[in-house]
Image 1 (cartoon, helix red, strand yellow):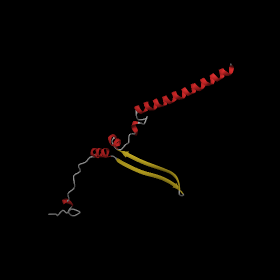
Image 2 (spheres, one colour):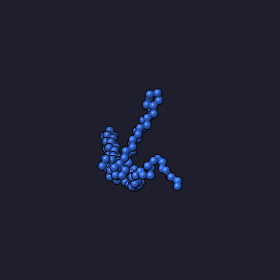
Image 3 (cartoon, helix red, strand yellow):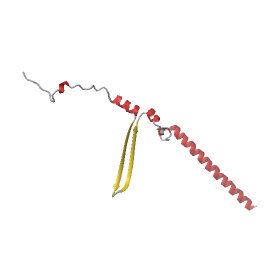
Image 4 (cartoon, helix red, strand yellow):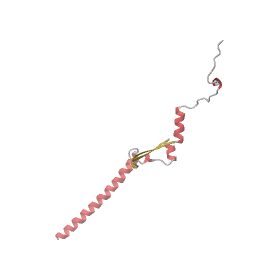
Amino acid sequence: MTDVSTWPPGADTQQYAPVTGNLADLLERVLDKGIVIAGDIKIDLLDIELLTIRLRLFIASVDTARKAGIDWWETDPALSSRAAKDVLAQENALLRERLATLEEAVREALDEEQEEIR
């Protein structure tokens, strides 16, 4: 009878922990806790800094991001219709104020011109 050996010795008796997680579990854990990836790119020429790019990536669920104090998507007009309406309302109010100022200046100029004519 032929003796079959295993390499390395004892490999057939080692116990491995079963793989219980899958991609969905990993994704749920990352979104629940959040993960930060940070990096800097710096370009120097003869000890003169030409360009520095700082990259920060925060991957998390909306709830986790809010707990971290991040909610820029709620105030960015490109991402939120409510924020876009707020921006338009502010711009409208500013334009109305500028128009009122210009109309008042025109009225004063016309009044001065009429007084000079008399």
